[in-house]
Image 1: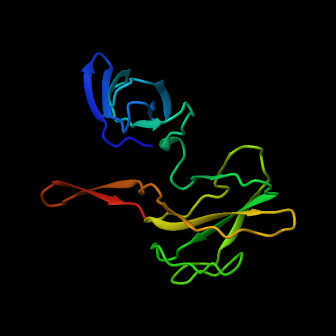
Image 2 (image 1 turned 60 degrees about the horizontal axis):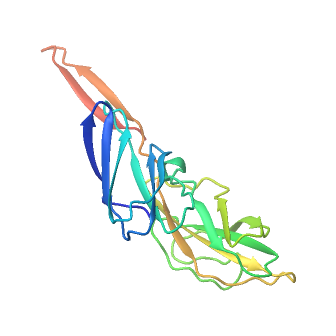
Length: 210
């Protein structure tokens, strides 16, 4: 679980204090800085937690705290772009394979899908669903793969995923759709400088790229 109540306090000499409140005093905390693990697993046996980490305060940085009930190492959000999510599901006993389906919504808004058959058509501004991966069983209770394709996220866009188990006869299950919102990074701004020929004054304008 991602902790969203982090308090950041600079201490000087390149040290920063991170404080937060966990949901339980029995969870393990993992602390990431700019996508890199700097502390964890950290068990404080209290909900109110605090760590001191070395970090340069001359620029910006991204701090993340993830809480888990076991010592499973989480993945930092900043390590995986929003357009390349991780897809995970619970394994199904006797499954011969898993099929991962993906749908993109053209108007950038979540629409209602009709799951009538594999490769089903989706109503309301959505394209047809496509199978993007077929994954063999790996002998684990939890299956995980990185999305095999980069998602279109210009201006923010809704996608949906579903994972179906397939038995030895090719019969496929019918699971609910899991929605996902992809967003590209904003375009790089351009600085425009113009000089007034009469007064000689300079004017500055920041324009976002197309």
